[in-house]
Amino acid sequence: MARKKKYTEEEVIEKAMNLFWQNGYESTSVRMLEKAMGINQFSMYSSFGSKQGVLLESIKCYKNKLNEIVNKLKESPDGAIAIKQFFYDFLEISSNSKQKRGCLLVNTATELGEDGDEEILSEIWKFVEKRKALFIEKLKTDSSKSDRTILKQVNYLLIAQQGLAVASKFCNQQELEDFIETTFEKL
Image 1 (cartoon, rainbow, N blue to C red):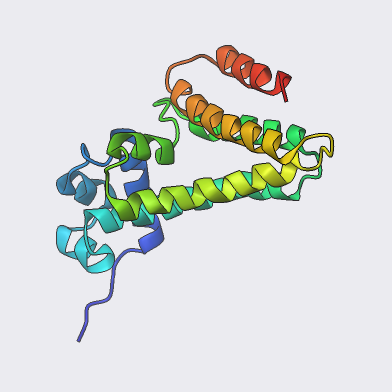
Image 2 (cartoon, helix red, strand yellow):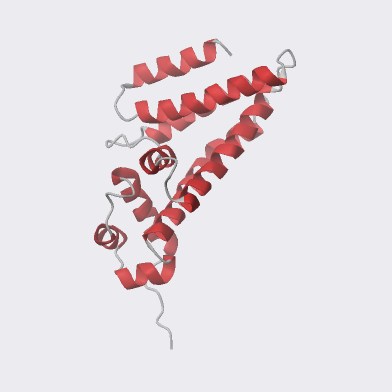
């Protein structure tokens, strides 16, 4: 007879997500995960398959946290103003701790680099592609912009958001807000 789990996967993944977010993938050991998640290695591997599986589930958990601000952007009819608000909302998430951890997705992609684990990077890029499509949709509300201009601006905004994620780890609030304001002056 199989033993019943004494934990919920959502709760332990949230703990793992915070650990990866704080330390990165490579610096987070299985022992650290066991301690943070409150489960042993056997249970971890039984539920998630591997350290990579724990990270993949952690990325999904993180993306679920971002869904609130993504949905807010999706529902807004305000074009570029809605994207600007998304940046402020994103900033609140990425700098909303004493640790100033930035963005789990940006941190992980930067750590792994372009030759990193394909499955992990694929999960991150799926989110980036959805955000790109949403930014395009919002910028198309301005009929004076050509498709080429919109694409250039969206590429700029995606890179700016990554920069914001990194800057949120060490810049003060005023510097970050100035960055957002300047980013949207030209749009």
